[in-house]
Length: 436
Image: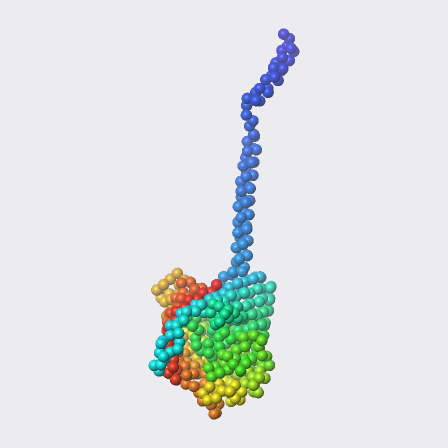
């Protein structure tokens, strides 16, 4: 057999056998292809994981902008009310609430039966809503629901709602429904800012918390001093009475604005933990309704000091009202129902946080306190009128405030009420409050 023929036959046999070998052996992918497929699957899984993390982070950041943490106080406002100032831009939400139980003594000081009934009240639920338009302009508001109802005994009200224009730390503009910057509680009325269950009587009667009026003005900080100065609509003297000026608040609701008033406050903050200052209010309250101007002046001085767990707060207030005889005549008030030409009051409060002595820890606070108050809404009346001794009041309150968290407080106190008519009714109070 020639060599050429042999080669041809061998090639033909090999070609015929090739399909048989292909059918009998499995197909094997190259090793680099398997690695590439595995890598693609791993990258796809990592991509899905990162997308989930990104979505969660976006949600967290969005909510974080709205529910900003409580930080520093701004322009005299309480901590939660100041949250909008920490937002770069957009919406901010905060609030607070209070509930209390009051057990009144069944007898007055003179031994007669008391007509006060024990009560349990979800006193208020408040929402702060703010919006920062940009680095200069913002809106801030407080909306309050009282006594857990909008029906009988309850109400919904706007406590403040204003626009701020922030131009420099020394001078900022404010306009809208403004808190009158006098005393402590009118601006600092969140329940974690005071120890007692109820707000001090002097700051409910003499400085009628919550006192707000429509107006405009300026605020800022200059060195160690802070200030607020506003022009607001005046009181309506139709609401004045022997028990004080509280009924003259107009609360921004279709307020009579024939008469205006100026109010200014200055605080010195030159020592850590110390606030020392005063405020003055001056304006007319007749509103062209009573045939008299009814000039109204209120002056107050205050001190707040915190040092190593020790807290001291003191306040003095004096109110002077002109044309009271004519006002009494216009309102039909006679005898000891007269409005006071001069009214005055004050209190001193002392407390000590036992956490500073190591009794409790973990960011908690346990503060026993005592507060002594005195006020008289008829310290002086016009000639021909008299004073009612029941309006010359002394109150001694002592109790304890426990804060398991800086934004939560549980309180217990007892208040002894004495007045010149021996008709005071003592009360035991238990309360709860929170801010967010």
